[in-house]
Image (cartoon, rainbow, N blue to C red; front, side, top):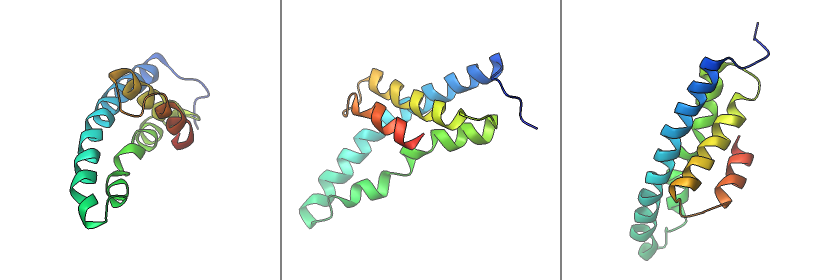
Length: 103
């Protein structure tokens, strides 16, 4: 049976996951841009999104698996998107919308 609230350990784990995945999201933006540049001349530019989308959807499910609390996936994904925005991600505040939808 799940506990209905988050303990301090859960909050700290969510914060650590969010920092790690926010940094990964920010860094993976460069991989996305490089793949887009490489694939555009042959007409496969949009495929770069398809090849790299998996990483941007990992924080929520991992938080849900590790914490097993209602709302853990949403909070993990949204906070990771927020961290990416704070780090200077190329999509800016649109990261928050993406984090809302993916969470």
